[in-house]
Length: 122
Image (cartoon, rainbow, N blue to C red; front, side, top):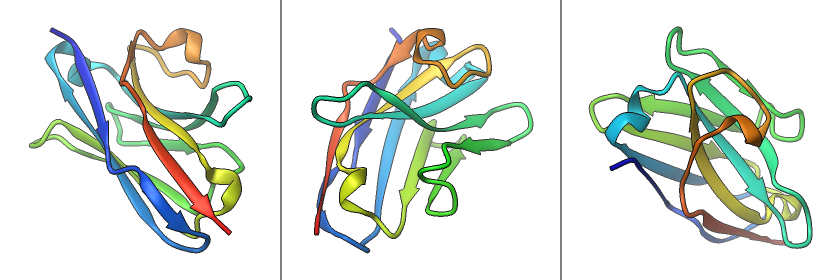
């Protein structure tokens, strides 16, 4: 069974750091791209960043570039989203997703986790 399970969300203050984890099972771990998306209340889900399995490359949305880092631990079948210098506008439900193709569009991602809430207070 294909599963993605996020963890690590919580309430932090502006400027703090937080690391989210996404544990993958089944065939999701063999997908070429593992990505993070987020959805703030009342807004559409947006791309945060992605990790490309073949060469380890990463790509980030401009809004998080330089603050967020995606890494992958093959031994643990887990992808991480390290978030530094958090801002109130980073408040959202964060989702991990898996895709066979490189894309920033959520429609290209077939597998999704349940999401984890991140709240950044000012």
